[in-house]
Image (cartoon, rainbow, N blue to C red; front, side, top):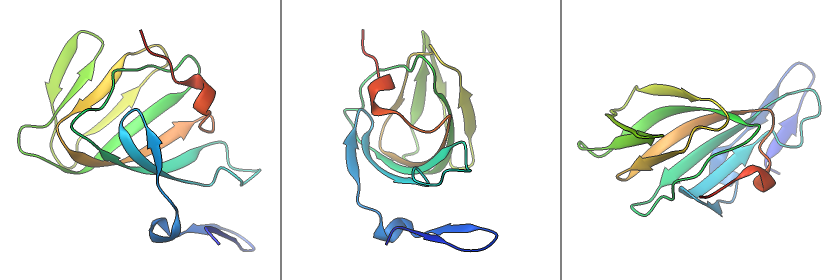
Length: 120
C-alpha cells in the first residue's frame, strides 16, 4: 500500500512507491488517489538526458534535495544555477528541464496528469 488513509492525515512512504518513467527521468508520485487533496507530490530522480517540456495546465514547484555541483535549470530561454535548497515555481506554459543529475521534490497543482506533458 502506497498511501495510508487515516482520520486527519495521509501518509506516503516514497520507498514503497514504484518509480515511473517521465521526461525528467524517474518519478515516484504520491496522493494521486486522495480525493480531497488538490495536488500530487513527487520525488523525481533527474537523469542526464532530461527532456525539455511544458504543461498547459499544471503548475510545478521544484525543491532541489540533491544535485551535482554544476546543476542548472533551463526555464524557457534562461539557464540558472541550482543547488540543494533551491526552490522554483514553474507556471503553465514555461518550457523547462533540469540539467545535470539531481533529486527533486515536486509539488504539482492541480493533480499530475500525464496527458499534460508537451514537447516542441
